[in-house]
Amino acid sequence: MSFREDHELHKRRLGRNVGLALVLAGFIAIVFGLTVVKVTRGDYEPENARIQN
Image 1 (cartoon, rainbow, N blue to C red):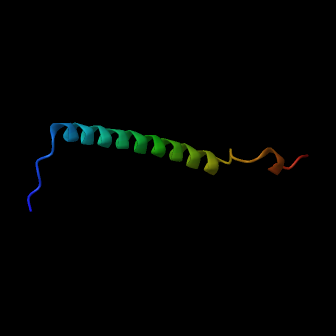
Image 2: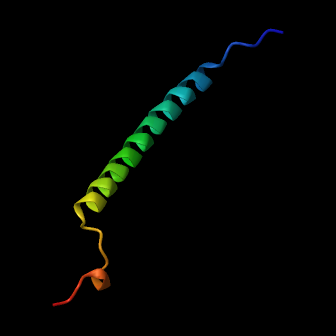
């Protein structure tokens, strides 16, 4: 069984999809990194969790 050669349009679409996937993965990595830093620094505490003096 032989497969037909991909059309040029499919090759361009694949390139765009890979590029978009890399951009989205980078954005997710940035948001995840910022979240980890914010939580480990202790900036993520609700107001009512703090002890009032």
